[in-house]
Image (tube, rainbow, N blue to C red; front, side):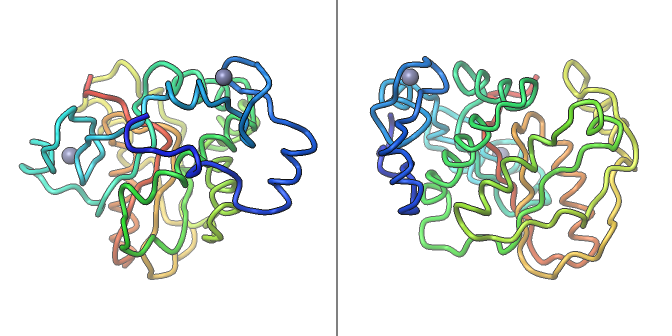
Length: 246
Ligand SMILES: [Zn+2]
Ligand SMILES: [Zn+2]
């Protein structure tokens, strides 16, 4: 594990620590009994693709220590910074798939813990955003899937960090076609007008929360809406970031 230490991911409340002592966790990935007070064993934790060297603005994995990627240099994104715990590959894909399509809430709690445990890498001593805003699903998709994976992660982050969650500041007006396999222009067309402010958000720094960030068209759209509503600074927190633009 690059710069991470397993202590960063251990439960931070006594009750939870005690609960793991009484009922040892099972590793969400290899299904073996976990040797850590975590739903993950130390071997699988070591193998996770942590997003170490990445763009300081958009968290695009760079594989070297350049601070800002070419795209962010050319056009400044509407968010102050993106924090991504993992690169979206290997076991990170497995965890996200379990949360998203199998409604595995243990995977959601684990992803939130990985996001919280790596914040220091992105923020150091600078202040964290003051509200969390999960990317909303359309009513149709929520009905079909039964849960919003971004909201699952945001709620778990709230329990970890105590940052309040904004559940109804932004709504998704229409159901958009899945973003994968589309060109960037098509993604943008697809998302235009897909979100709207439902309730005026507080004018404090807000972190948009999602499971995966690919090209970032979704979070850019929501970030622009929040900025237009007067929010002073928008951040993005995701469990995983895709390594390169498709
Ligand atoms: Zn394991
Ligand atoms: Zn960038």
